[in-house]
Length: 229
Image (tube, rainbow, N blue to C red):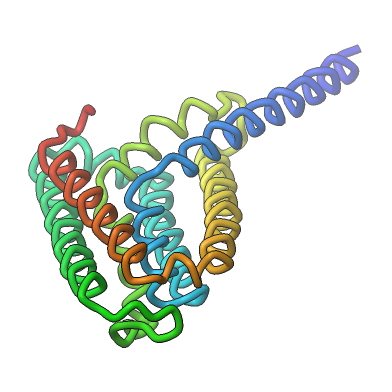
């Protein structure tokens, strides 16, 4: 009898975990698809560096997510958010980096606007591939809002009866990373397919201008954020 009850509990537990995982995946996908700095930077770099530039930025972004996911799993993110000084240092560093990127985008937009209307030749040489990877990585690694996500949102889906909360947290983080790669992989392919039109100087300048303004707005919001919001 006890064995049958234990087996029933196992089936119910597995089903509950499957429901939690599905709910988390859907919620995570919605968050990933929402316009933000990742999408802005990936769009711009896919236009400047082609599909390789977009994919490298995407890989850098997921590596930045991995930093916060791992830190959250071992408890470092909670300590970071609990320390006003550490949180302030990280958010200021992140805000300054995003502002620097915003200035680069706006300067690039000005150059694109002055360039001849050619669909085939870029106005300037694209950055080295390492720059794409670095931009994607730092935009997430220096963003305390990403740490806040893994500390506040992810634990809502952890099961009290899980064998290892840390292992389960890493599993959910892995699912988030896979969804991130899947969505932005498709997104980069779409941008690359429309690249000939999107790389027209007038269109490219407008995209870079919008990207710069968006990154500046995110930087200001990040700089004025508190650990609890």
